[in-house]
Image (tube, rainbow, N blue to C red):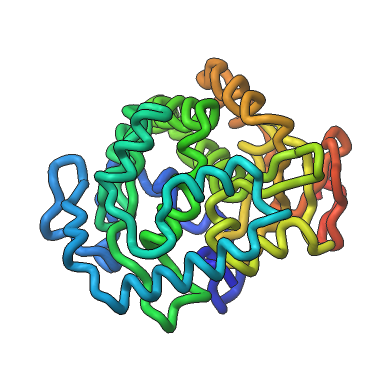
Length: 316
């Protein structure tokens, strides 16, 4: 099971108690994080950042980081996108919890992004503002040894190992900044749910078509051993070609492996789709039915029709 999963009845993103791990986009607009979140919010700055205080990480935490890093990186060849693997290697972060300031120097030189330390999930407006200004929020705390295979909230391993390699890709980096800039408009239109689906499916759980077959680039899967293996080889989930409106209409599970993965032709495809005006898009989406996580439309480009997939016509 990965960090988005739990041994409890499956729920969907419609669950009002849900605070989306890793994106914040499904939280209620302008609300502070829930009081039961794990991070220490007592010393946050106005933008919800904190100091990393790297020197306070223990030897045991660095050892756990090495274990997580080595275990996950070992399964990436042939499953993760080549650029993800190359960018992970260039950071040279296998032996200890990374210093955000050092990685930010590399990242800024490559794509103009920096890392900022946060205590955990942050409010929507702060999250979108960071992304729009090329600041990626990374949680400062690391999971416990007993949580190596399951974690409710995003920790530093998920945020860094899963997300930061893709920030070195110029096109994907531009896409994520454009996504952040869409946040205030989504808040005004009451469309956070639709925008959250785009992040969930295309940042956390995205696949890309390559000359060698489908490869994973999403942070939610590539920071999870079990879902890295599941997303490409298991017959259960649908694998469907990316289409912006389709993604933003599709509900998702937050406590189980994904029922559908969307496949990009290229990162340029994602950036170009996000460059359009979303005001009219939100109006169209409001008039269309939500597609269930396992639903498959007649208009879909289907790479694989999953064992749990079913034809959805908007009525069943």
